[in-house]
Image (cartoon, rainbow, N blue to C red):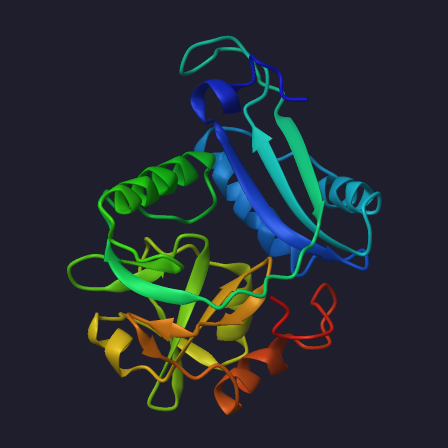
Length: 259
């Protein structure tokens, strides 16, 4: 249970990772661990050990396919922005049986109403900013029923609120290259395999692309059905190249797309 004096609650001094645990394996755990360490470094905190073991132990209580979030905070320490004594970090693990998502994804490019910041890791405070932005968009009726936001500014496309994006343009998968884009674990696996490349992604790619994929460590790869009301490809060779990188790897669902 979260301590009411925990600095993650009081000051958002916290970072997190979300991922699937499939048959006792977390896909590319070391990259999740590295981002946690990077986030804690920003707060002057030290990442505790045995986190992977704790996650797997907790996931085993729920089943063979579990969605999990681990949050690491500044722990219970004196109030104030910079407490003097050494802090013992707080570790909180939440687990749920994974539920397959079957709904189509319909994206619309949306001018993000708040400043966009560098995202080298997953800071809890960044999610608060994202929620504020989404409420602003909803209140201004910028999305139709059933649509999701593709975040952009006046010049470039960046990401969905909880996913990296890949756009298939003239036979090549492209993903935005910008410091406001989270360096996703699945995104990195696809880039490392050479099936996609990074580049600045201007607005016109939304009108030119044949297909779009969303990636994260929950659903891995999901095709997008439409962008700004224009139907997209959702199967075939473009997606097979992405799935082939992930299929058969430990911690990945046996079937892709898995929703």
